[in-house]
Image (cartoon, rainbow, N blue to C red):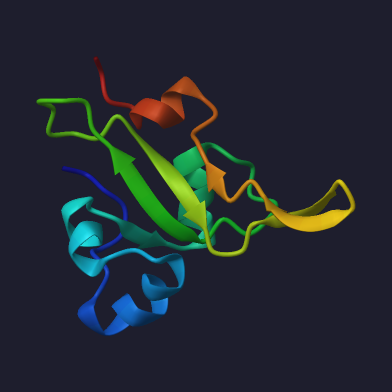
Length: 107
C-alpha cells in the first residue's frame, strides 16, 4: 500500500485529531495520514497556490488493497462570505484529475 506520510504519532493525536472530533482508533483504522501543503497539492491535483496541509483520507474499493483516491481535509481552508457570513470553503478537497484519483495505478 503506497500512502503518503506516516500514521499519526500517539503524541500528535491530541493536537491533530481532537480539534476535528476524530477518534484515534478510527483514524488508525481509516489509515489517515497528516500531509504537508506540497504533498496535499499533489494528492488532489492542484497547482500549489494556497495552503493544502491537512489530513489525507484514503478511499478503498471493497476487496481492494490499494487506495482508489485520497480526499484532503485541509488544516486551513479558504474563507469566503456566504449570505453575509464568513465561512470555511473547500475544507474537503477531492482529486480533480483522473490521474490524481488513481495515483497512476493501472486498472
